Image (cartoon, rainbow, N blue to C red; front, side):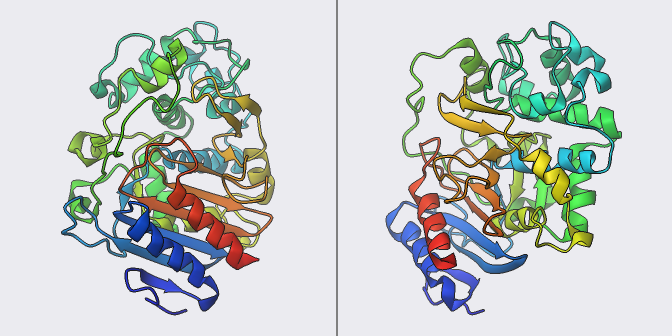
Length: 380
């Protein structure tokens, strides 16, 4: 490995991957990047681990190797991994009704909703149906009980509608009922700690100095959704989310496995590498058999909330339109503003990107696409 062929890029990469470093440098120089990290693992070995730019909008604090940043919905891939680990250990099955572990959730016509349906956004609980404030998102059990009591906004199983924040509230409540442990503790004790991955749900105040400042998109809008349906209002506008929320103590103290993971590209790529067959079985997070079940598309088509075609597995987004490279079996998740992480079993690679300057689009961020294209060009 070698370092700093491109002067603005910190880290290490083999000469074969110079094109990735060049694309990363171009993001900083030409595509509005402020600070970011990128990592690529091939065959279980990290071959690119780079970072650069600034942790803050004032460009006074350099992005460092140990910088972490809120990755919004890229956290959902971590959530999906946690549930896959429970399946792998025989504690649950994806076809189990949620109400088996959480009877109250089965009210108002949700009794047949399975864990897989919940994780693939088919439950019809895309958000609060009655007026809500940002503080309600931090409500833990209180918020979960409120969502569990709701009637679904569409017939469960008839379609998928992105549960943008609510899936984190519901997942946390369900996970605790199954295991007696919080998702935050499980991630710390079963994933981050044993595997040396710099990944937390929320962020402790003692680590605040390592966090990059989240910067709002240059333009804010409804991303072309037009007049919002009740399902879209619940997911996206009740309450509306301020892009700066991750900079606040309240957001960082919450347990939202849908949106408040703090990490960097090296850790996310490391997590997805541990889901691939090439990783030594003794250190793999989930067996190949279970990960195949976890990443099998459960529903496909136009998402009722996003208005975009999507292939939803049990918590993972499965590749379509080459969002995650050329291979249709790639799986992962992306976050509001541009972050992403995914594994591609066909190419035996794991790739991740985190940043603090958010973009406007729901998908196709030019910074992310440039890095993915450079990675696959190098892989041949």
